[in-house]
Structure formats: structure tokens, C-alpha cells
Length: 512
Ligand code: SF4
Image 1 (cartoon, rainbow, N blue to C red):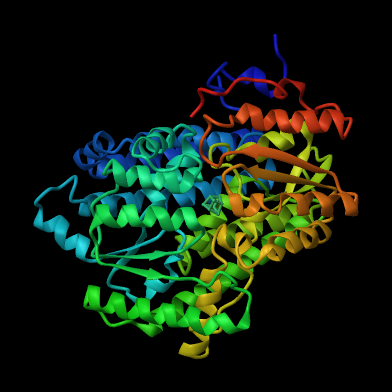
Image 2 (image 1 turned 120 degrees about the vertical axis):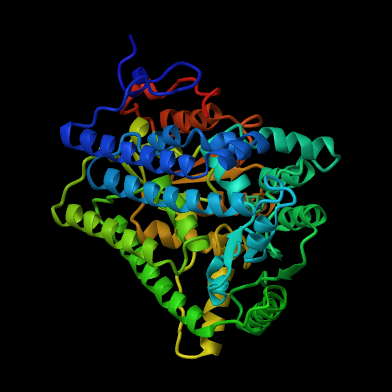
């Protein structure tokens, strides 16, 4: 019989046969938080049972949310001590926020409540934002709720269930749109074609972020939603001084649009209060980066970068998220001070480029199978500025910087040097001894500088393992293919044997 972590997985689905044994204290902690997760989910389901059942039957993507407990278990695989606690706290905090938002969405949704005046009234108070626009700007409209339009039907399901995007991507291709576009905008386009976005909101603020594929899909969404729409354009060369006035003018124009659509007056004091909370969230994040620069990185992986994406886009300026940050940091600080490291680390890696949504627990596997610790990830380190709240003008410039350094956008735009030079800096800062480079085959902008990454790594003598992936389409590159790229590199280039041989080869193609 197979020994090691893989012996606890069902063949094909890689679903755990039983809960992971992590020692008495950690297993008990993990179990408690897992039970807490179920309480949150059951409470949410029972609060509006008819509406939630309707949503599951109406929206194909809603099925993915049924896999959340298993998804969280995968993200916590192998974690012990402070890392386990931080992961569970982050994930349970997110699930509370997401379930509340789903209730807001479904109670205003014209698809679930056709002809309902109550739903229509609720919709009037909802502002829709493109998912890459942080909601911080929306805090200036405290009587309205700002929601990221594609986050709940697309981005989150694509992480929870690797197959969630396949149907929608196929629909986009059947519709006649190019098959070689990145699966993220393709998934978004498929949702519009299938009419699977909730029918909500009084207006929509779109953006040109992160890339051309995303701009294309906005057109299709616009046709489907029919909402009054305003693009908030973000400069491509976002590091340059001379484009900042344009960035601020775009924000001001969006504010005027939102005032017209909502009938509300922009509340600068509310924005200031939210920016100050955001600054504290940023400081908490800087502290986390500092912990991972030590010899004892306490918390790494998708429960870190996913939470960062969530905080930067959704929970920016949210005091509850800040409370969670402080709790997590206290736990991490304690472990670092005690000089404990409950994991086997052989390599400190900088993980660069966009991670694969269809394999968010890839970091757990890197560590458990090969001892590769992801001390720094590109997806986790975007946005390093604080917002100066001393005047409206300074706040606008700070906000412009925050939007410009949004998820994925901060590194993929601004000129090739942003992504390239930052990599070498992070290798130094985090004292990394290897790079794991995602080769997102559909991300053409990044693909264009692959050679520069290779050349730079060779000149610096730092081993760089390339991992092919297709963001959220497992039909072109599977999780197993991604693991094989690492296995081959570790065996041939690094000449190493795995920490856990059972994890080198296993089948999880049918997994969520
Ligand atoms: S991964 Fe690349 S191509 Fe895909 S949405 Fe992001 S920036 Fe665009």
C-alpha cells in the first residue's frame, strides 16, 4: 500500500479519505475551524432557503460553492502551527463575507425574482464594479453597496472547482470568439453569452484592467446587462509621473457618473475613513511580508495570496478584515518569536507570474512533495503604497495608485521592466534559492518576455523551474501536467529526491 500523504486520497478525485492527522492540538484546531465553516454555510443556507435553492438551480456556477469545505481542506493540506491557524482564520473570514454578499446579490436578482419590486428596489442600491477595480472608491457611497460583478460567478468558482470554467469557455468558443484568448476573460464572456450573471445593479463601472482580453469581454457583458456603464480607464504606463493626472481625472469622472446614477452625493469623509482603515490593512500586510523574509516563514500559499486578492479588491477599507489581519499577525508573530517552524523546508522560492486558479493548492504540493516553500508570490505582493488622507487631492492620487497596482495589473503592465526587475529584487529580499515561474500559456504579454526571465536567471545563477498552466482551464494543461514539470526539474536539474514520494505521481483529474 502507498505510504505518505497520497495514501489518504481517493484515486481520480484526490478527495481525502479522512481528515488529515497533524498531531493532537493542530488536528483539534483544524477540526474546530472546519466545523465552524459548516456552521457559517448552514446558517447562510437556512437564512433564505427557497432563494438559495433557486440560485443553485438557476446558476451552473453555484454548484461550485457546494465544494467549499473540500476546497478549504486542500488549501490547508500539510499546514501546522501558526500557518494552519492563519489559513483557517483567513478562509473562514472570507466565507462569511462571501455568503453575506451572495445573499445581497440573490435578494436583488431579477433572474431569481422576476417582476419583484422589492428586488428592483434593492438593485437600485447596488453599484457593480469590474472585478479588478478595488471597491474602495465605492466607500464614498455609504448608502449603496459596491459589488465586484464577476468575482462571485467567475473568479471564486474557478478557484473552488477546477472544472467550473470549462462549460463557459466552450460556449465562448462555440459562439465564434477566438479560442486562444486567456480563459479568464473567456469564462466571463461565456457567462454573458449564457445569461448567467445575476441581474443586479443600478449601473456598472468597467475598466481596461488587466489586459486586452478583458476589454473584449466587457463588450459582451455590456450587451447582456444593459446597465448604464462607465469605463474607468487605468494608465498602462502606470509608474510614470505624467499619467497620474489622467488617472485622477478618470476617478473623478467615475464619481460624477455614480452620483448621477445613484442620486447620492459622494461622501468624502466616508472615503477618508475607509482609506485610513485600508492603510492599516496595508501595514498589517507589510508585517506579513516581513515575517516571510525571516528564516522561519510562518504562512505561505493560497490562503495568503487569495486573502490578499480578496482584501485588495473586496474588503479594502473593511474594519472586520483589519481585525482578522491583526489576529492573524499576532499568531504569526508569536511563532516567529519562538523560532519555531513546523515544516520541512529545503528551498525558498519566489513564485512568479499569475498562479493557476484551477490549482490553488499547488503551493501546498510544492512544499509537501519537494520541500519548496513559496516565501514570496507575485500575486501576494502587489500594491505597496499608503494613501495620504490629508486632503481630497492627495487621497485621489493615493487611490489612483491603489487601483493601478490592482491584482495581476501591477506587474503585467507598466512596461516589461516592472515584472522583470521586481523579480530579481524579490529574490534578493527573500533570500530565495530558486524561482518557480508560471508559464501561463494564454497570457501573451508575459509570454513575450519569457526569454528575458530565462536569461536573467542564468546570469544570476539561480535555478528557475518553469511550470506550464492555463489559468483556469484544466483541459489544456492539467494539475498533473503542472506537477510533472516540477518533478522533472527537481529530478534532472536539481538532482533531488522527493520529501514525500507518494505525492510525485497521483491522479486528481476528476477532483473539484
Ligand atoms: S492572466 Fe494575462 S491574459 Fe489572462 S487576464 Fe491576466 S493579464 Fe490578461
